[in-house]
Image (cartoon, rainbow, N blue to C red; front, side, top):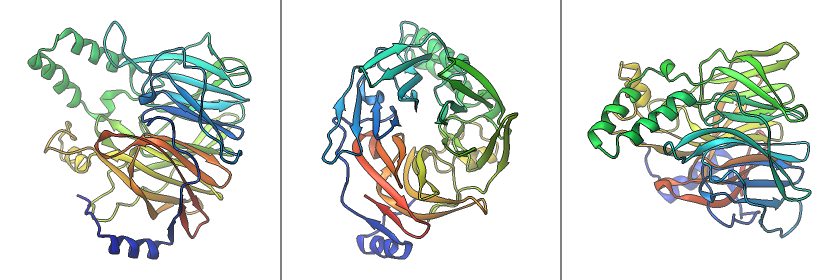
Length: 381
Protein backbone atom coordinates (compact mmCIF):
# COMPACT_ATOMS: atom_id res chain seq x y z
CA UNK A 1 0.00 0.00 0.00
CA UNK A 2 1.06 3.58 -0.46
CA UNK A 3 2.98 5.06 2.42
CA UNK A 4 2.10 8.35 4.09
CA UNK A 5 4.97 10.81 3.75
CA UNK A 6 6.14 13.23 6.43
CA UNK A 7 5.83 16.91 5.60
CA UNK A 8 9.57 17.31 5.14
CA UNK A 9 9.73 14.38 2.73
CA UNK A 10 6.73 15.72 0.85
CA UNK A 11 8.30 19.14 0.41
CA UNK A 12 11.51 17.54 -0.81
CA UNK A 13 9.59 15.50 -3.37
CA UNK A 14 7.74 18.61 -4.52
CA UNK A 15 10.98 20.50 -5.02
CA UNK A 16 12.47 17.63 -7.03
CA UNK A 17 9.43 17.24 -9.28
CA UNK A 18 9.11 20.90 -10.21
CA UNK A 19 5.73 21.12 -8.51
CA UNK A 20 4.19 24.25 -7.05
CA UNK A 21 1.01 24.75 -5.05
CA UNK A 22 -0.67 28.14 -4.99
CA UNK A 23 -3.76 29.69 -3.48
CA UNK A 24 -7.17 28.71 -4.86
CA UNK A 25 -8.35 30.82 -7.80
CA UNK A 26 -12.02 29.83 -8.04
CA UNK A 27 -14.79 29.70 -5.41
CA UNK A 28 -16.05 26.43 -3.97
CA UNK A 29 -19.26 24.88 -5.23
CA UNK A 30 -22.32 25.66 -3.09
CA UNK A 31 -22.49 21.93 -2.26
CA UNK A 32 -20.12 19.02 -2.61
CA UNK A 33 -20.66 17.10 -5.85
CA UNK A 34 -19.30 13.67 -6.72
CA UNK A 35 -20.44 11.32 -9.49
CA UNK A 36 -22.09 14.27 -11.23
CA UNK A 37 -21.51 15.79 -14.64
CA UNK A 38 -20.50 19.06 -16.20
CA UNK A 39 -19.14 20.86 -19.22
CA UNK A 40 -17.77 24.17 -20.42
CA UNK A 41 -19.77 26.48 -22.69
CA UNK A 42 -17.73 29.49 -23.72
CA UNK A 43 -16.37 30.98 -20.51
CA UNK A 44 -18.97 29.38 -18.25
CA UNK A 45 -18.75 25.96 -16.65
CA UNK A 46 -21.85 24.01 -15.62
CA UNK A 47 -21.76 21.30 -12.94
CA UNK A 48 -24.51 19.32 -11.26
CA UNK A 49 -26.36 16.10 -10.45
CA UNK A 50 -24.62 13.26 -8.58
CA UNK A 51 -24.66 14.09 -4.88
CA UNK A 52 -25.98 17.51 -5.91
CA UNK A 53 -29.42 15.95 -6.44
CA UNK A 54 -31.29 17.53 -9.35
CA UNK A 55 -29.35 20.81 -9.07
CA UNK A 56 -27.03 22.42 -11.61
CA UNK A 57 -24.72 25.36 -10.98
CA UNK A 58 -22.84 27.69 -13.31
CA UNK A 59 -19.68 29.76 -12.89
CA UNK A 60 -18.42 32.46 -15.27
CA UNK A 61 -14.69 31.76 -15.30
CA UNK A 62 -13.84 35.01 -17.05
CA UNK A 63 -15.61 37.27 -14.57
CA UNK A 64 -13.48 38.36 -11.64
CA UNK A 65 -14.96 37.50 -8.24
CA UNK A 66 -17.76 35.52 -9.90
CA UNK A 67 -19.86 33.23 -7.73
CA UNK A 68 -21.61 30.00 -8.54
CA UNK A 69 -25.20 30.53 -9.68
CA UNK A 70 -27.93 27.93 -9.37
CA UNK A 71 -29.62 27.26 -12.71
CA UNK A 72 -33.01 25.74 -13.40
CA UNK A 73 -33.27 22.31 -11.79
CA UNK A 74 -32.70 19.27 -13.97
CA UNK A 75 -36.18 17.96 -14.90
CA UNK A 76 -35.12 14.33 -15.15
CA UNK A 77 -34.75 13.94 -11.40
CA UNK A 78 -31.74 12.87 -9.38
CA UNK A 79 -29.01 11.11 -11.36
CA UNK A 80 -25.66 9.53 -10.53
CA UNK A 81 -22.87 9.25 -13.10
CA UNK A 82 -24.62 10.91 -16.05
CA UNK A 83 -22.64 12.14 -19.05
CA UNK A 84 -22.52 15.79 -20.13
CA UNK A 85 -21.09 17.82 -23.00
CA UNK A 86 -21.30 21.38 -24.28
CA UNK A 87 -21.96 22.02 -27.97
CA UNK A 88 -23.11 25.12 -29.85
CA UNK A 89 -24.02 27.07 -26.73
CA UNK A 90 -26.04 24.32 -25.04
CA UNK A 91 -25.42 21.75 -22.33
CA UNK A 92 -26.39 18.17 -23.13
CA UNK A 93 -26.94 15.60 -20.39
CA UNK A 94 -27.28 11.88 -21.06
CA UNK A 95 -28.43 9.00 -18.90
CA UNK A 96 -27.24 8.16 -15.42
CA UNK A 97 -28.24 5.85 -12.59
CA UNK A 98 -31.63 6.49 -11.02
CA UNK A 99 -33.84 4.76 -8.47
CA UNK A 100 -37.09 3.67 -10.15
CA UNK A 101 -40.20 1.68 -9.25
CA UNK A 102 -38.49 -1.41 -10.69
CA UNK A 103 -35.34 -1.22 -8.56
CA UNK A 104 -32.59 1.04 -7.32
CA UNK A 105 -29.62 2.12 -9.46
CA UNK A 106 -31.33 1.61 -12.81
CA UNK A 107 -29.59 2.78 -15.98
CA UNK A 108 -31.55 5.52 -17.78
CA UNK A 109 -30.83 6.25 -21.44
CA UNK A 110 -32.66 9.54 -22.04
CA UNK A 111 -31.18 12.90 -23.05
CA UNK A 112 -31.79 16.55 -22.13
CA UNK A 113 -30.56 19.90 -23.40
CA UNK A 114 -30.10 23.04 -21.30
CA UNK A 115 -30.24 26.45 -22.96
CA UNK A 116 -28.44 29.13 -20.91
CA UNK A 117 -30.11 31.86 -22.96
CA UNK A 118 -33.46 31.30 -21.27
CA UNK A 119 -32.42 29.03 -18.39
CA UNK A 120 -34.57 26.16 -19.66
CA UNK A 121 -34.33 22.40 -20.10
CA UNK A 122 -35.77 20.36 -22.95
CA UNK A 123 -36.15 16.59 -23.00
CA UNK A 124 -34.89 15.42 -26.37
CA UNK A 125 -36.85 13.03 -28.55
CA UNK A 126 -34.08 10.46 -28.58
CA UNK A 127 -32.46 7.73 -26.54
CA UNK A 128 -28.87 6.59 -26.32
CA UNK A 129 -28.37 3.36 -28.31
CA UNK A 130 -25.82 2.24 -25.71
CA UNK A 131 -25.80 2.84 -21.97
CA UNK A 132 -24.39 6.28 -21.22
CA UNK A 133 -23.57 5.19 -17.66
CA UNK A 134 -19.92 4.24 -17.45
CA UNK A 135 -19.36 5.87 -20.82
CA UNK A 136 -16.96 8.78 -21.03
CA UNK A 137 -17.62 11.66 -23.40
CA UNK A 138 -15.60 14.24 -25.28
CA UNK A 139 -16.95 16.76 -27.76
CA UNK A 140 -15.87 18.32 -31.02
CA UNK A 141 -17.61 21.44 -32.33
CA UNK A 142 -20.59 19.42 -33.55
CA UNK A 143 -20.47 15.90 -32.07
CA UNK A 144 -20.25 14.16 -28.72
CA UNK A 145 -18.14 11.00 -28.78
CA UNK A 146 -18.89 8.28 -26.21
CA UNK A 147 -16.27 5.70 -25.22
CA UNK A 148 -17.29 2.56 -23.36
CA UNK A 149 -20.22 2.11 -21.02
CA UNK A 150 -21.66 -0.65 -18.88
CA UNK A 151 -24.18 -3.20 -20.14
CA UNK A 152 -27.65 -1.90 -19.37
CA UNK A 153 -29.42 -5.28 -19.40
CA UNK A 154 -26.91 -6.96 -17.10
CA UNK A 155 -26.76 -4.04 -14.68
CA UNK A 156 -30.49 -3.34 -14.47
CA UNK A 157 -31.25 -7.04 -14.19
CA UNK A 158 -28.77 -7.38 -11.33
CA UNK A 159 -30.50 -4.75 -9.22
CA UNK A 160 -33.97 -5.95 -10.18
CA UNK A 161 -32.97 -9.39 -8.89
CA UNK A 162 -31.67 -7.78 -5.70
CA UNK A 163 -34.99 -5.97 -5.27
CA UNK A 164 -36.83 -9.26 -5.73
CA UNK A 165 -34.68 -10.82 -2.99
CA UNK A 166 -36.54 -8.59 -0.54
CA UNK A 167 -33.58 -7.97 1.73
CA UNK A 168 -32.71 -11.66 2.19
CA UNK A 169 -28.91 -11.59 2.55
CA UNK A 170 -28.42 -15.21 1.46
CA UNK A 171 -30.40 -14.57 -1.71
CA UNK A 172 -28.44 -11.36 -2.34
CA UNK A 173 -25.16 -13.25 -1.96
CA UNK A 174 -26.31 -15.83 -4.50
CA UNK A 175 -27.00 -12.96 -6.91
CA UNK A 176 -23.83 -10.93 -6.40
CA UNK A 177 -21.34 -13.82 -6.27
CA UNK A 178 -21.94 -15.07 -9.84
CA UNK A 179 -21.87 -11.46 -11.08
CA UNK A 180 -18.49 -10.66 -9.55
CA UNK A 181 -17.09 -14.01 -10.70
CA UNK A 182 -17.67 -13.19 -14.37
CA UNK A 183 -14.65 -12.71 -16.61
CA UNK A 184 -14.01 -9.17 -17.84
CA UNK A 185 -15.33 -9.90 -21.34
CA UNK A 186 -18.51 -11.37 -19.86
CA UNK A 187 -19.52 -8.01 -18.40
CA UNK A 188 -20.13 -6.92 -22.01
CA UNK A 189 -18.96 -3.35 -21.49
CA UNK A 190 -19.37 -1.49 -24.77
CA UNK A 191 -16.56 -1.71 -27.33
CA UNK A 192 -18.38 0.54 -29.79
CA UNK A 193 -17.58 4.21 -30.20
CA UNK A 194 -20.88 6.07 -30.43
CA UNK A 195 -21.43 9.69 -31.41
CA UNK A 196 -24.36 12.06 -31.06
CA UNK A 197 -24.88 15.08 -33.33
CA UNK A 198 -27.27 17.59 -31.71
CA UNK A 199 -27.90 19.55 -34.92
CA UNK A 200 -29.53 16.52 -36.55
CA UNK A 201 -30.51 14.63 -33.38
CA UNK A 202 -28.62 11.65 -34.81
CA UNK A 203 -26.65 8.83 -33.18
CA UNK A 204 -23.90 7.13 -35.17
CA UNK A 205 -21.74 4.06 -34.76
CA UNK A 206 -18.20 5.39 -35.18
CA UNK A 207 -16.59 1.96 -35.18
CA UNK A 208 -15.07 -0.62 -32.90
CA UNK A 209 -12.68 0.11 -30.05
CA UNK A 210 -10.24 -2.80 -30.42
CA UNK A 211 -8.93 -2.82 -26.86
CA UNK A 212 -12.02 -4.01 -25.00
CA UNK A 213 -14.97 -2.35 -23.31
CA UNK A 214 -14.37 0.27 -20.64
CA UNK A 215 -16.25 2.09 -17.94
CA UNK A 216 -15.08 5.30 -16.31
CA UNK A 217 -12.11 5.94 -18.60
CA UNK A 218 -10.64 9.43 -18.88
CA UNK A 219 -11.11 10.69 -22.44
CA UNK A 220 -10.25 13.87 -24.33
CA UNK A 221 -10.35 15.21 -27.87
CA UNK A 222 -7.65 17.47 -29.29
CA UNK A 223 -8.12 18.27 -32.96
CA UNK A 224 -8.74 14.94 -34.67
CA UNK A 225 -7.22 12.91 -31.83
CA UNK A 226 -9.33 10.97 -29.32
CA UNK A 227 -7.40 9.90 -26.22
CA UNK A 228 -8.56 7.08 -23.91
CA UNK A 229 -6.88 6.60 -20.54
CA UNK A 230 -7.43 3.45 -18.44
CA UNK A 231 -10.90 2.71 -17.07
CA UNK A 232 -12.67 -0.25 -15.54
CA UNK A 233 -12.89 -3.51 -17.52
CA UNK A 234 -15.12 -5.32 -15.01
CA UNK A 235 -16.44 -4.51 -11.56
CA UNK A 236 -13.45 -3.61 -9.40
CA UNK A 237 -10.79 -4.28 -12.05
CA UNK A 238 -9.03 -1.58 -14.09
CA UNK A 239 -6.64 -1.53 -17.01
CA UNK A 240 -3.42 0.50 -17.12
CA UNK A 241 -3.43 0.88 -20.91
CA UNK A 242 -3.92 4.07 -22.93
CA UNK A 243 -4.96 4.49 -26.54
CA UNK A 244 -5.06 7.24 -29.16
CA UNK A 245 -7.53 7.36 -32.03
CA UNK A 246 -7.39 9.52 -35.15
CA UNK A 247 -10.85 10.59 -36.27
CA UNK A 248 -11.30 10.44 -40.04
CA UNK A 249 -14.07 10.42 -42.62
CA UNK A 250 -14.23 6.63 -42.59
CA UNK A 251 -14.02 6.11 -38.86
CA UNK A 252 -11.36 6.13 -36.17
CA UNK A 253 -7.90 4.61 -36.56
CA UNK A 254 -6.46 3.42 -33.25
CA UNK A 255 -3.02 2.84 -31.82
CA UNK A 256 -1.92 1.82 -28.36
CA UNK A 257 0.27 4.12 -26.29
CA UNK A 258 2.35 3.29 -23.24
CA UNK A 259 0.78 2.32 -19.94
CA UNK A 260 0.69 4.64 -16.95
CA UNK A 261 3.71 4.11 -14.69
CA UNK A 262 3.23 2.65 -11.23
CA UNK A 263 3.00 5.13 -8.35
CA UNK A 264 5.77 5.11 -5.78
CA UNK A 265 5.59 2.16 -3.36
CA UNK A 266 3.23 0.17 -5.58
CA UNK A 267 4.24 -3.10 -7.21
CA UNK A 268 2.39 -2.23 -10.40
CA UNK A 269 0.02 0.28 -11.90
CA UNK A 270 -3.51 -0.98 -11.25
CA UNK A 271 -5.12 1.41 -13.71
CA UNK A 272 -7.55 4.11 -12.63
CA UNK A 273 -11.25 4.77 -13.18
CA UNK A 274 -12.97 8.04 -12.44
CA UNK A 275 -9.79 9.99 -13.20
CA UNK A 276 -9.86 13.66 -14.24
CA UNK A 277 -7.77 15.13 -17.03
CA UNK A 278 -7.41 17.63 -19.84
CA UNK A 279 -5.04 19.68 -21.98
CA UNK A 280 -2.80 22.44 -20.64
CA UNK A 281 -0.27 24.30 -22.79
CA UNK A 282 -0.59 21.54 -25.38
CA UNK A 283 0.11 18.81 -22.84
CA UNK A 284 -2.40 16.22 -21.69
CA UNK A 285 -2.35 15.54 -17.95
CA UNK A 286 -4.57 13.30 -15.83
CA UNK A 287 -4.94 12.73 -12.11
CA UNK A 288 -6.95 11.08 -9.38
CA UNK A 289 -9.31 8.19 -9.88
CA UNK A 290 -9.68 4.97 -7.94
CA UNK A 291 -8.70 1.32 -8.03
CA UNK A 292 -8.33 -1.75 -5.81
CA UNK A 293 -4.60 -2.38 -5.28
CA UNK A 294 -3.97 -6.08 -5.75
CA UNK A 295 -6.94 -6.71 -8.06
CA UNK A 296 -4.85 -7.04 -11.23
CA UNK A 297 -2.58 -9.59 -9.58
CA UNK A 298 -5.59 -11.57 -8.37
CA UNK A 299 -7.12 -11.56 -11.83
CA UNK A 300 -3.85 -12.61 -13.46
CA UNK A 301 -3.79 -15.55 -11.03
CA UNK A 302 -7.20 -16.71 -12.20
CA UNK A 303 -9.31 -15.07 -9.50
CA UNK A 304 -12.24 -13.50 -11.34
CA UNK A 305 -13.71 -11.96 -8.18
CA UNK A 306 -10.52 -9.95 -8.12
CA UNK A 307 -11.39 -6.91 -6.03
CA UNK A 308 -13.32 -8.68 -3.26
CA UNK A 309 -10.76 -11.45 -2.70
CA UNK A 310 -8.20 -10.75 0.00
CA UNK A 311 -10.01 -7.80 1.54
CA UNK A 312 -8.85 -5.26 -1.04
CA UNK A 313 -9.91 -1.67 -0.49
CA UNK A 314 -11.07 0.97 -2.93
CA UNK A 315 -8.23 3.49 -3.06
CA UNK A 316 -8.30 7.01 -4.45
CA UNK A 317 -5.14 8.61 -5.80
CA UNK A 318 -3.47 11.99 -6.24
CA UNK A 319 -0.60 11.38 -8.68
CA UNK A 320 -0.56 13.58 -11.79
CA UNK A 321 0.55 11.94 -15.06
CA UNK A 322 1.68 13.72 -18.22
CA UNK A 323 1.64 12.27 -21.73
CA UNK A 324 4.49 12.66 -24.19
CA UNK A 325 2.34 12.14 -27.26
CA UNK A 326 5.26 12.03 -29.69
CA UNK A 327 6.80 9.12 -27.82
CA UNK A 328 3.56 7.65 -26.52
CA UNK A 329 4.89 7.55 -22.97
CA UNK A 330 3.78 8.80 -19.56
CA UNK A 331 5.51 10.10 -16.47
CA UNK A 332 4.45 11.24 -13.01
CA UNK A 333 4.99 15.00 -12.68
CA UNK A 334 3.65 15.64 -9.18
CA UNK A 335 0.54 15.16 -7.11
CA UNK A 336 -2.54 16.92 -5.78
CA UNK A 337 -2.79 17.93 -2.11
CA UNK A 338 -5.20 15.03 -1.48
CA UNK A 339 -6.63 11.96 -3.16
CA UNK A 340 -9.67 12.53 -5.37
CA UNK A 341 -11.76 11.05 -8.17
CA UNK A 342 -15.16 11.12 -9.85
CA UNK A 343 -15.30 14.89 -10.26
CA UNK A 344 -15.71 17.12 -13.31
CA UNK A 345 -12.66 18.17 -15.33
CA UNK A 346 -12.65 20.88 -18.01
CA UNK A 347 -9.83 22.53 -19.93
CA UNK A 348 -9.98 26.32 -19.83
CA UNK A 349 -7.24 28.56 -21.13
CA UNK A 350 -4.01 26.82 -20.24
CA UNK A 351 -5.42 25.12 -17.17
CA UNK A 352 -7.33 21.97 -16.31
CA UNK A 353 -10.04 22.67 -13.74
CA UNK A 354 -10.97 19.90 -11.30
CA UNK A 355 -14.42 20.55 -9.87
CA UNK A 356 -15.85 18.60 -6.97
CA UNK A 357 -15.21 14.88 -6.73
CA UNK A 358 -14.95 12.10 -4.19
CA UNK A 359 -12.45 12.29 -1.33
CA UNK A 360 -11.11 9.59 0.96
CA UNK A 361 -13.88 8.07 3.03
CA UNK A 362 -16.45 8.70 0.30
CA UNK A 363 -16.94 12.36 1.18
CA UNK A 364 -17.97 14.67 -1.64
CA UNK A 365 -15.81 17.70 -2.40
CA UNK A 366 -16.96 21.24 -3.17
CA UNK A 367 -13.45 22.45 -4.03
CA UNK A 368 -12.40 23.82 -7.41
CA UNK A 369 -8.73 23.20 -8.19
CA UNK A 370 -6.71 23.97 -11.29
CA UNK A 371 -3.65 22.32 -12.78
CA UNK A 372 -1.27 23.74 -15.34
CA UNK A 373 1.81 22.18 -16.90
CA UNK A 374 4.23 23.68 -19.39
CA UNK A 375 6.26 20.55 -20.00
CA UNK A 376 8.54 21.25 -17.06
CA UNK A 377 6.59 22.41 -14.04
CA UNK A 378 3.23 21.40 -12.61
CA UNK A 379 1.29 24.13 -10.81
CA UNK A 380 -1.76 23.27 -8.70
CA UNK A 381 -3.98 26.09 -7.46
